[in-house]
Amino acid sequence: MAKFKGRYWLNFTGPKATEPLIYLMSKKFDVVFNIRQATISETVGLMGVEFEAEREELKAAIAWLEEQGVQVEPVEINTIEG
Image (spheres, rainbow, N blue to C red):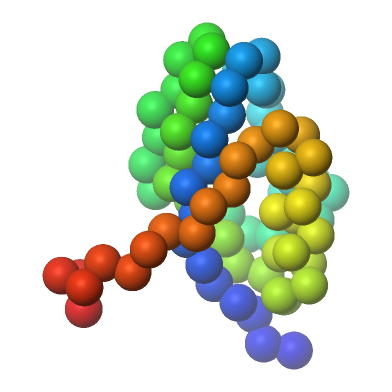
């Protein structure tokens, strides 16, 4: 099966901002991640991440992140990049 690659914004709040959730996700699911941008404090985190995985595996990983309290939003295509 073909791998899917997508970019997402991850928003963390509260104690989740300091937990190693991306690491834990990568141990639980077969997802390659590339952190493109991040701003993390003790209470808030915003991270731009690129994920690569089989579609169903990525869906499961995103669902797991959301269960952990992470807001996951796809990055909109920037028409200037094209």
